[in-house]
Length: 366
Image (tube, rainbow, N blue to C red; front, side):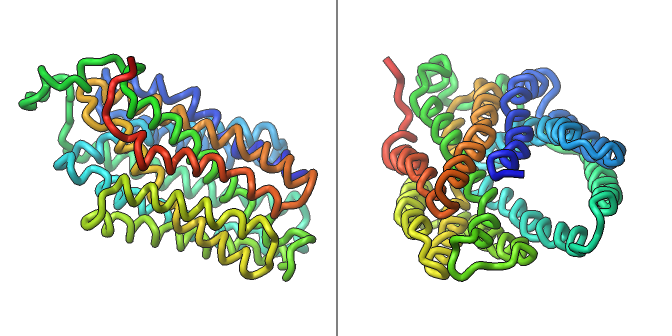
């Protein structure tokens, strides 16, 4: 399988974000945040169970369809949980809350590659045995997520209905009275989120290819790839946790701009293929990408009042960037080498830098 073909895994998941975000938003406006979270968890569990049930078919395309269903669940969760987190408390600390809550994503990302190494670590196993070993993990994932959905169903959570809030400036806030297409910070936030997810998915997807590329010096064994990936995800998690704390002392927009600037500086170092120096620079990119998604999300829906749920849907739709970009980055890597492929995300971080400096400001589009 080529690097471009492997990008189809990301394509199937992130395309689901594009297709499911708006229906999830409509569902939330009708049934609320809590039910939206339960729906997302249920869809994700269904996809996991389907993978376990269809593994014996040994079909890559069926696997992609199951991943698409899981992606629909993730899209629904993002549409519901992210804005819900920003609403549970003072709006001044919304960026900190969403960064802290999303820090726990990193823990799963750290553990995930190690679990994959445990399952597929025996290279002497035949292909059928490797595929059958997927049944138990995905069954456990589906069962665990279904249990979490049940806990949410039983839990008493506050339901926030922006349409019924009585804020002092509800009637006079110009940002809330304009249609979303006229909200400059929202429109630029959608573009920035597209750029970020495209860049993040490309970087995440090809770290193992980078450290195992035949042109890499030193060249690492592919069997050790998951260890390198877990280190990167650990730095990503540390970046989010520390970022949520640092935001107590620094304006989130300035921190976002600084982190984007650092990514712009580090990626050329990655791309020159300078061995350990390039690998350390790539790990730096993992760290500095950490706060971008939740911070852009919080800034994009800021002061939108009753339009928050709809705006959240569009911001989740922009995650489709993760479907579009990895195959392109893979094609560049196939044509040249993996190091050169890491030049590709730089323009995306330049736009995020602009969003953190000026694009976040709440203004109308004439």
